[in-house]
Image 1 (cartoon, rainbow, N blue to C red):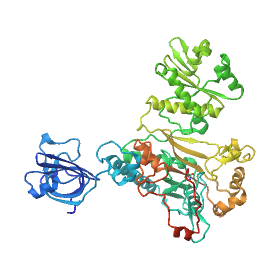
Image 2: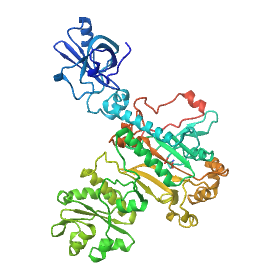
Image 3: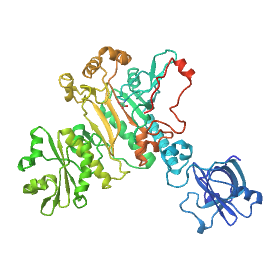
Image 4: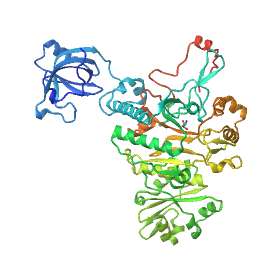
Length: 589
Ligand code: ASP
């Protein structure tokens, strides 16, 4: 019995039609000898009725159905009387009066319910992922993901980009994470790396003249897993020649607007605001600020000399920073104890403590208020604070003052429920430092990757003051997440060599690892720039979820294991022999 309709399409206009439906038994109930089945497929749910007009044998078979049996049903569409219409169901105007039933396959006792919102534990969900994916929520997420990918392709196509695949068995790509390695059987002792991104290949494609490239690329990074990180993830990767960063921004802005309109009917305001890395850190304490939170830092240093608070004075004397943030109306709800919980957050970001005070009708109270009460009016005026506001401070070196108060800001947004998941606030963060100091190894590291261009004015002095060099780097951020990173690339082999030098990458090693890219640049490399954004991450945010596992069909646990296929797994002795690999026994910890 091959289906002639889906479980989501029939309505009153189909009254009297004879149809065959295929699907799964979502729910079954028996009402005084009449069996009702909710039959489900990807398209919806339709009620099927086996009533007294059915032959006894058919009724018996219907009564034997259990949840998630896969069945075929033949019957007649019956318009329900007005009083029986189910407005909550797309097919609620009708039901099917069954005349035939074929049980295609039965189903064992379910490890968890498919119907309803309650969620099984993660191991079970991933082990029986095929069942978990039958749940309405997961069906919606996977459908949205599909629509987003489609919109991405549609948009690139409209701009005349080429979709070009790049290899997945490659030499290492330096994105800063650990590589997954694949032994090369035909060259024992040698390994391929799985791509951390298509970075080197997309740049080479620019040298080949394909001036607008994109790919929905699978990437691999051997990093510890967490909510918004998986070993394998999908990136929308693109690169363009003869462009500036503004051209890249324009493509991304139009693409995001297209995706949101097409899949969620949301009008995203574009262009997105831009803020420099310095502004983002200085005002929000994060390089991926959540702009839904309406609290910005104020520089408090001008008032420090006017009060007798030694701690702030000495921080300023040592060249540090004092930032203040006003939490509107929060004073009555923040007891000393609750403030000390916020302080714990600040401390995990390196702060020594969290200074605070409350604004009252006639002055300041609590925390460090006594030092500032003599200049209470000036404090209120500088910060625009009013009675019942809570004032929190970030103090220390600039980085620590900003990041610790930034972490408190993010926590407050959660505690006070200040943000809505479906308020999407995109922004560009630009002008990042090109290099970052690595305190452990006492060397400069590339802040993004080694192929990003220093801005013109820093090119001459790059070696003297690496820490001051601003790169042509940019991130797209949304709601506290870094969604995309990219840069204008170096296309001049000389500048590339100098960057390698600053990050302590010996020329021979550069030659050895990326010689092929550097060599290609000697054959008329065009100026180029690009970006990649996380598709999983975007869809996760669009679904209002906090874990990538909710939008990836077959994800892994944070231990790196996939309970469905139980990978990673041991392999046969012969396979190892073939690869000339000997295992060293590992003691269990
Ligand atoms: N390859 C970079 C990344 O994966 C993105 C880019 O620079 O285009 O983060």
